[in-house]
Image (cartoon, rainbow, N blue to C red; front, side):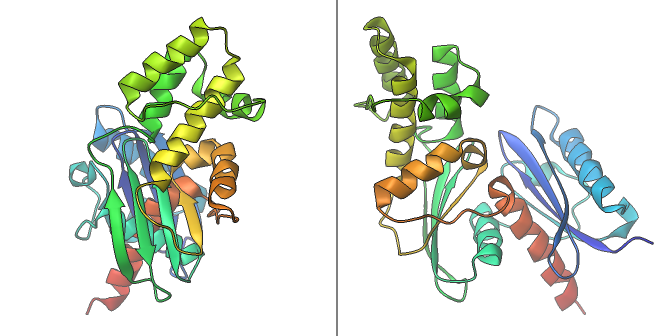
Length: 263
């Protein structure tokens, strides 16, 4: 016997995420895949992968909501799409139901979202026009250093010092990285400097409240960034169980609530 489920889709420019929840809001399945060039096919693959974890089929979906860059390119959505800000806020507040500041570090943009104790949005900021501090910045630096992206986190941990980058611009930062290589600086120290630059770029976007939540795919794959952020702001930060899935989770919660509130 299968259970009726609700689906949230977060189709970013870099990665597509799908979350399947039950009526109680518990996550039953999830999937992540590079968005690629065929958004509809990627979304369908993630949906079927996540559903397979639950034992449910597409006919068991009671409602589905999409968010993100490619949210209008998906066929199985049943409700009106929601904004990325709204879905990330909803997903994080589900894990931490209190007044929080959310720092979301995504593949193409960063967001700072402030919520009050009831989950209502006080303010938000995004950096849409610059890749500095985003996953795209880290990928570019990984390419320049010829180091697999998956190895950057462990390398940063091995650093003995931080080689700070003077510029936040991706192009100028890449030039600085090459200069450090030319001067024989340890690669681990360079990578830690890249991580430091990313966190600094995000933190300077806005003032933070007492409770800070980090989310996003960059955080999920680079836990050292979380430790560095906590050190820089001088207090622990909160991390959802699935940092990369908060937007999709928020969309799934919107789908459930919309269905339950419908006549």
